Length: 194
Image 1 (spheres, rainbow, N blue to C red):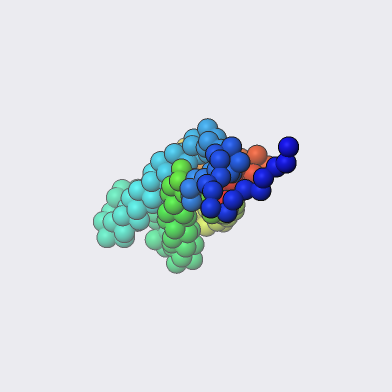
Image 2: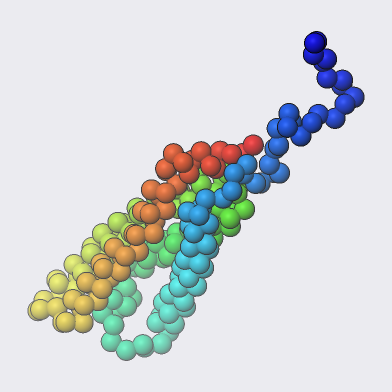
């Protein structure tokens, strides 16, 4: 029995034709981790954006209205360098909160660019946390201690709270970085390109 060559006018049978995923969709179902990180990126990015805007509002308000005794605001009011440092840090955080939201939407839509964008966000967040901590020690804690006397319990608690909050703030970027660098995650996002 001889095999016939397929006719160029004949529609290939479903078993012989590879099924390509539509653009923007992976050939395999989206992993649960991609869904979880996509949703968390959107939610946390939105909170970061709103929190950053609220922070800017308070800083502008503090420039015109006395909000009560606040050693950190008083130090910032007296130091142009601290104001510039904080402003640059806030601008970067606002920009990267938008990056996080966009990356989360991209993850949920199976966009290949969302994984490297998430990695960029995570690296920025880790570096920004280290720089922010060093800057606050240099601009805030150092001058408070130089003023003489013992720091008040409120000063100590504010500083400790900032450090603890900064450490908790590193959990998500580190987890996102680890997940996005996993070979299985990279391989799944590669299927989104096809």
